Image (cartoon, rainbow, N blue to C red; front, side, top):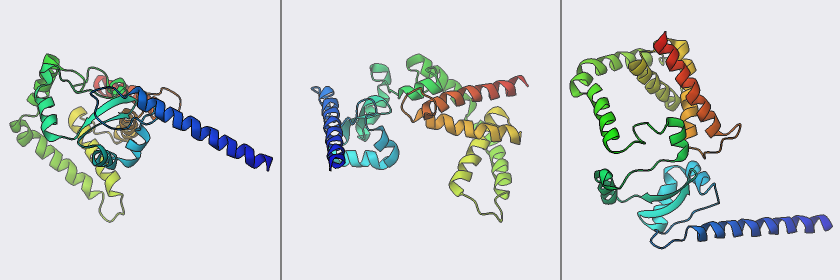
Length: 236
C-alpha cells in the first residue's frame, strides 16, 4: 500500500510540474500583437510533434488557429504564416526590413554564409552567380544529356531486384547531384558521402543541443567529414 501511495504521489508531482512548466512557457510568450498558438515545453517547444507529424502538424495548427499562428520549433520561437498573399509580400519585400529566419541548427551546420542565410546585396550576388551556371542553354545542352545518361545507367541496376523505391530514389538524386557538382565518379567516395549527407540533413532539423549522440552533434561532425571529402577531391 505504501509503495502504491508513493507511486501516486510521484505521478501527481510530475503532472503538477509538467502543467506548471507548460503554463509558464505559454505565459512567457503571451505578448501583445502575437498571433494565437501554443509554445509547448521550455527549450524543446513543439519540436517533437513537428518532427513526428510532419506536414500534418502545420495542417492541424492551421485548423485550430488560422493561417497565422505562433509555435516553438527547433529551438526557436516561430511565427508560421500559411497565407499565400502574406508570404508573397514578405518574399517580395525582403530588402525593406523583412528577412527570412532559419533555425540555429541549420545556420550552425550549413554555415551563416550559405545562400539561404545571407540577405541583400550578398544574396543577390550569390544567386546571380548560381543562376549563371544553370542558364537555359546550359541546362539544355550540357546538364540534361548528362543527367539522362546517368539516370538510365543507374536505373538499369534496379532490374529484377526488389528495392525500397523511396530510399533508392533519394540515393539516385544525391549521386547524380554529386556527379554534376563535384564530378565524383568513384563508387567508394559516393558511398562514403551519402550517409554523411543524410546525417547533415537530420542535424539541420534538430534542436541545437551539442551533446554526444544527438542529431545535432552528428550533423556538425558530418559537415566536417563532408568538407574533408570535398577538399580531398579538389586537391586530388
